[in-house]
Image (cartoon, rainbow, N blue to C red; front, side, top):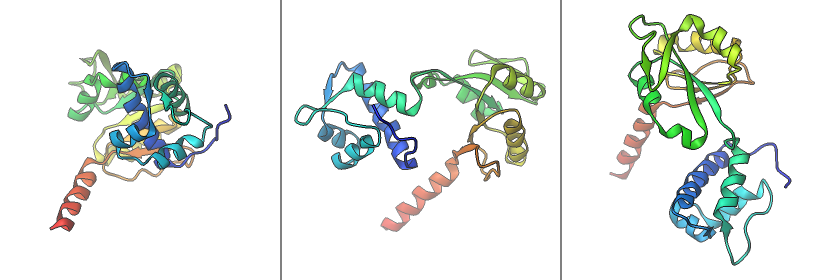
Length: 210
């Protein structure tokens, strides 16, 4: 099946939502789903759903719907989550510890396999089944295991420096929890998870409704 090499970021985000819904339907033994059902489940129009899929070819049958198992596998291939991706975590504070303990990543073929910190009280301890290593071992482990994805949950004053180190060791994608805009090479993908900003946006929306 012919596929495009580029899709808009918003489309990629919606594909992730579609995949989450399809996996839930698969668990519930649902075999066929219609675009109208998807509209009701996710508040995404049928037209938008079909447009998002059209970047990658033809799916489903008119008047019949979409095969849940087949579409799940196709979107997994599109997003690259049809294989396991191992991730390194830097910064095992309260947030980092919670991420290590979270079991839901494996559902998406994502696994935090390494964790690093500089605090002597944390190094050597086990959290979420992962033994925490000293940040001095970061370079050796990333290169040895050929890791490409990192989660950054360090204090804001260290985020830029640590991010640059990660990139120099071979990391190409970073999920950043520090409230700072990282300045990195153009070929490094950064996604910022700034919960305070998201909450601030919600507060603003509530204010606008008054």
